Length: 600
Image 1 (cartoon, one colour):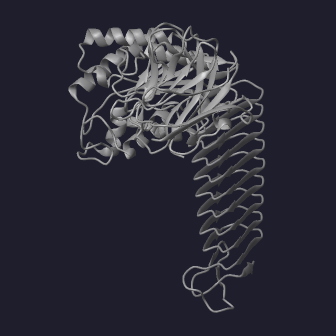
Image 2: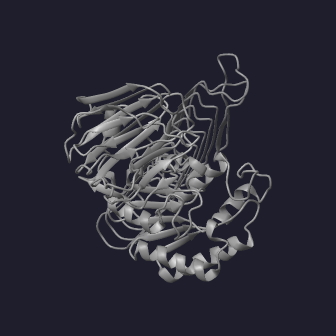
């Protein structure tokens, strides 16, 4: 189903709310039992939320949850879409008795529902074509049909959605809607009545112009946040073309209105991403400074502010640089604020080229799908918590993170240290004390561990691109992983060392201490071992491309393998070439020989 309009305040359909073309400030956010709703505030004034164009499909399907607190003195229109020519498509009116009245293109009354109760949630599910219209009213359970109003008549094809209070008088008492969906296939009552999950933390607000709205497609930002495991339920998102720092946008909402709405839905906002200023470039410094002050005052002093800097295609303009400087000065004065240098970031990617696959050819401000995907990723990067953790006391230290850009931990005291994370690009750990050290993660791009104390060290992970371990103390060292691109281990102390892996392209081990060393793996393209100490060395593998072993110490050396190939497949059985001196044993298997089993 293609959703052409979504207004809900949550992420239930896998996207943020649509970029609107109308959103009167008297239509405000409000939470009812923790669920986000829009309230159409009662006043004798026209107030509309809407969007155009919608493409004038042959049949428009729509649905939304609906609650009323009372009835107008006489019937008043609350839904009045237009055609592309600006003519009436249809109307829905709320009557003085609490019924819903359906009007055709000529505003002629066609059908009327039964009375709807006040302060009760319903789902209104409809479809309209040029010749027919049906609206089914469901109870809050999503299955019980309260009534159906329908007509065969003349209707206009919907291109401009307009909902709220369409006429100035009489006023409709406060009424509410949520999960407004308009699309080209049927919409169901359970979909519009679904409620989101409980809010978590952190709670994030994002306000921007067309470059935040993705020029009408905010899916770039939703997908980037979702991919980074940042809960989109906890995000307020507003991106509208032409939006300025403080002045009302084309929908009628100011940034201060957005901040109020976000607080109504989410409560305390922990971090604000502000991506405004491009449309303020024609203004003088004094005006821009005053507008920045207005916005920062509305945010308040506790939330962190991340402001995305300005730039243009090929190079930043003089006005881009001027406004960036004004923003940076204000953020420095405020504190707890970061200027995100978008210009430097995108220049390292597009090289300042013009034309560029990241920028539209029609102007110097807007981006292509490739550019918006990169910009969305840049926003997400700013949300990464890369604050180093430094603790020098005894006791347990636990660091957990999801999609964290980097975690750096320094710990020089006894006690357990545990780091757990998913999709963490970089984890760096320095530990110089006794006690257990455990790292566990999924899709961790890099883990670097330095350990110079006794105790157990365990590293477990899946799809780790690189693991580097330096260990110069006694105790057990164990590494296990799946699909590890590269692993490098250095060990200069007594104790057991074990490495286990599947589909590991490369493993390099340097060992200069006594004790057991075991490596086992499947489909390992290359294993290189340098061993200069007494003790047992065992290597086993299936489908291993090459083994290269240098051993300059006493003790048992075992190599076992199946299908160990380097070069063309040799004839079976293959032979093992051994060369030995009193100090050194070198074992190499190269085509046309194939090592099946060798013990020395």
